[in-house]
Amino acid sequence: MEKLKKSIKSYSRELSTLLALLFIIVIFSIIAPRYLEISNLMDIVEQGTVNGFLAIGVTCAIITGGIDLSVGSAMAVSIVTCGRLAVAGVPPLVVVLVGLGLGAFIGIINGVLVTKMKLQPFIATMGTNSVLRGIAYLITGGWPVLNIPKEYREIFQYSIVPNLRMSMIVLVLMSIVYSFVLKKRKTGVYIYAIGSNEEATKLSGVNTDKFKIMAYMLCSMGAAMAGMVTLARLGTGEPTGGEGYELNAIAAAAIGGTSLAGGKGSILGTVLGALILSALKIGLVVVGMDTFYQYIATGLIIIVAVYLEVVQQKVSGIFSKKKKIA
Image (cartoon, rainbow, N blue to C red):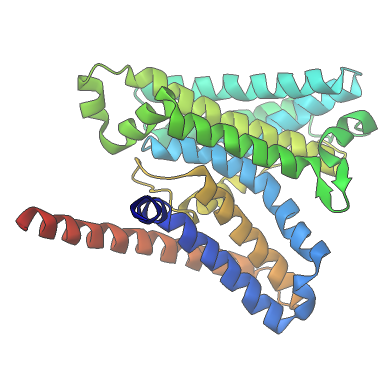
């Protein structure tokens, strides 16, 4: 019983995010019963897939106390690079491996800028965001990459059962891997420690630069995967792909309980946060509201989510003080 209580407490934020998702689904289903159709619910998952990949990557950077504003442009570079390779006849699995390697390389650059050159993460990744977007345009000359081969598209678009695509399975698998790294491996322990107190972590003998770079590497690999899935879904490689997506990714992480101050967050919470944004977007479409309201709703949700985080920290502080007095 005690173990169950501890387990519930450790996942309290994820449970509250899940309840918020269910609440949104219930509200929209009352307004429009067809919202609960299986095909529509699967659309919510599919629409949340790309943002999910971006968001689980961004979560790794945010946990260190940093941020990555370049994920949208990293996604675009992945789209056009992998698109060109696929059209050139490179085997699909090789294209995927190159895409992940490209993402890792971009993440290492961001990590080096933050750690070795001592740039603020906001400034460093804002700079690489612009550089990467320019590279995406240079690769294509500003034109989309057309006629993406069917063999590549089926890697992510193949339906195992109706409405259940491989991209959704890949998101689940990537979420499991990232969760394992963050929760069960030394890398994750140090990433959380850096976000909680970087100076103390450094004084304890940890090479904080190394693990920060690894966090940014994981971040950009998530962006690369989002790009490859988008390429498969659309069948064209647009250099404009991913524009503005970094804000939705950060929003999903914040909604899922990742502290923007660092040191706290989970992949499960982030994925649920991405699903909340997707459920909201599709819900507005189903009930016939202008999708522009999504921007207003998303902003309000972020404000509420961050405020709840502040309240939770205050309540935790009060209880910890009471325990010390007792």
